[in-house]
Image (tube, rainbow, N blue to C red; front, top):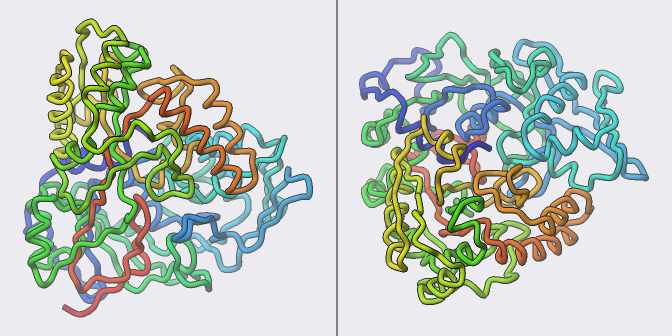
Length: 528
């Protein structure tokens, strides 16, 4: 994860090259239009889904690569490339055997050595991957189809980490690609997944083409979330890069594209009234909007000043500035609204409408002396921009001196790293709130951690246990304790949850409904 997976997608869309409708209408001779789906999924500019943690790169990865395990619709891990697996009696050695029929797009077979190299490369990036690599005594191929992970001590979360849907996912690459360091970009788009990347038709800045991998053998189980059989029902998917929202919507209305990832909320009524279009929430749990305060600078180096923000926020008012009421939901659990770890521990701070008086009391108790509060403002993400302006007004009402400092995609990360800020806002999938081992926004390890840098040794000790315990029930108990601590130290203030529906033509059906990422398999296109 960088600044925010979804933010980077949105900023990329805004910053991308604007193209005109005529360029969308390029004729394709084969396959037929009835077997071709055109999608607008954002500005794809990094193809390596390990080196990039954006959702756009993740969507590309889902199409052309496969994974060892995948999450089903209940967010439970299921085998995908793995045919059989087992764990030793002492829980220190996991052995995996690949299922039959796995082959790279160049025709060569997938081997255990490819999987080992892919695990090692991926293990340099996400926290969960690093944890596996750090605790492993050996990750090696046993034969062409079997590999093993041997551990220093039991790691109860190992299968969950391998199946994680947080970017970067563990996409299996050819050994010669995965042998590159994670800092060096893979340039070949050759996977073993259900789609092949069509290099000949690639038009950077305009469109990318994915063809059905006719030799792909899906699992026999029915499709279930990202798990089960990845059945491709169309011959081609064309990823159109249309950065201007109005142009993209016009293309959807006219039938020149079939799917629009992020329609502007202003267009929802128009979409609802169009007999050919439909809004659909693929990520039914939605995205969690939240703010981080700089815990290393005044005034938020004082925990009471951070607690004041927790009591101050009127979640519905914040979210309504940019998103229609029907798509927003309050959120009180640090672990999201609809994850296996959602709970109600220590949520007495929540009050519908917020509690400005309590916020003032806490701010006074913190000794606030008029220090400047710098809010980083998104220049290229309209929803956040409006919310940040509203947040500034809200803080001024309780006597805080506030400045808004705008920044775009090019300057955002530098602004954050500089430390010369007080509040930043971002969002992420509700699902990501269930992965404290791999999601840095759920850490509390001070200056070694993610932007904002809250610190709690007690919380971090519990987070370390999360990876070790072997059952869901044990992790749920840990989640309650961790949430209790988080709402005391207030490293994060939740602003609300929102569902962001996609727009599609009614002729396009069968879309996978899962958090964050968009799968191209399973979709079907009826004649217009």
